[in-house]
Image (tube, rainbow, N blue to C red):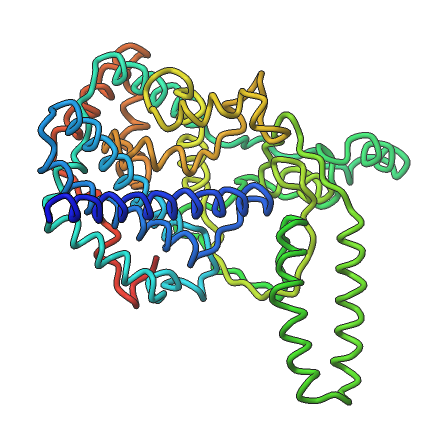
Length: 421
């Protein structure tokens, strides 16, 4: 009887592991083939399967006699639990339209994942989510990366007034505008540039730009099926027929285009480069317009600097033994297996910094300070006030203080169906 129960448990774990591998491959293929696109149901299903596996593996730990086996199984539980949390957080933290805030929390699968996580915690899983033991070397590297990244971006934006082209003769104006279309503009914006705190606005548009691969996917899976269903109800509607024809022609045109990823990403800053340059993703994929209404917050200069600092930190610590997950991704991007999306020379520039930062923050709770505007300003003051060595030592001290403090790695449990995601 005992052996049959053991066989049943092993079979369940094997089936869940196979399902986990299948879902991971589907998530990865979609992200790579469609410029980072996420299927909400697919990602939530993968998170649920990982938590199911964690619960069953925790039961196996109690039955394992060998300390080595228990350690290996425990590490597997920790890795899967953190991976499940990152999957859900990646959806919750997505920069979606303002009118779709709360969309993730309203999904039925979200409630299932939330229930699985509660089961995991009630079964004693909280211990597997504690911050890992730190090392002086890792803290030192991270403190240098944080201080260096803040120092790099903490300066005020350029306040110099633009060139007043109108003061020059017409032929000089034309020559300057032709030779320097980025640096010299007609009716240029004057300082201060960007959006300061308190000036953020809500913007809306009846269309948005998507990477070419996502646009094709959206037209095929959403727009055309909807129009075809409507034409089925009103076969004689000339307007719908014309719209379907126009959309079919656009789809054919998009399919003729070819995308070859750049070996080195292009880092573009909104409102600075020409429209022609900002018509591409960092990997060089064309952005094309889609009739999809969107409402979003403009963000501020401080939001932009915080985002730049977080991205810079991930790039600086990649491959340096601070984060196992970031290092694995870094080595993969350096290898031939990564294909055209990798880079053997500048692999750190190809890392998904948002995913990397979420992974790093789970190991170092201190990094949550870089997502809080007030605490970020305090870090900027620390870097400005002290020299290089003093600011790095102060930040290293804060890293250890926050590691020892209690933290809630499952913050998304508190998300309700009406709260913003």
